[in-house]
Amino acid sequence: MADAVPTMADATVEVNHDVCIVSGMCASLAPEIFDIDDDGLKLEVLQPTLPPELVAKARSAEACCPVEAIQVTEA
Ligand code: SF4
Image (cartoon, rainbow, N blue to C red; front, side, top):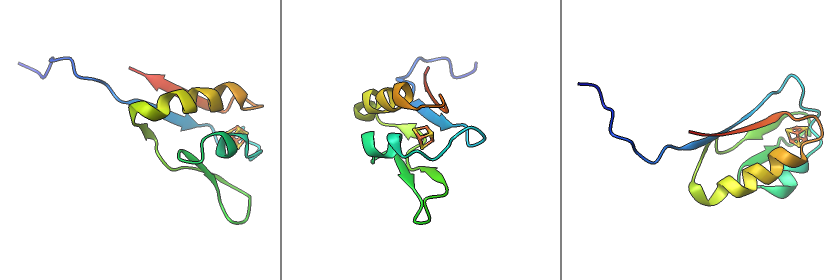
């Protein structure tokens, strides 16, 4: 039988780099999760899998992204 035991599923965060304009809003709101590279040209997701204590911050960043590039998924 397959593993069907419900566990506390991880929340994840993804960024659509095709639409991200590297505004830095998310990195300001949640520097534990997002970082802009030294050249200011690319956003990096430091924690694609979110610990529970960072989900609210990720949600704030998702809400504030000017181009809706951030997607937080909670299974
Ligand atoms: S807030 Fe949105 S547009 Fe700005 S860096 Fe983050 S993902 Fe990119």
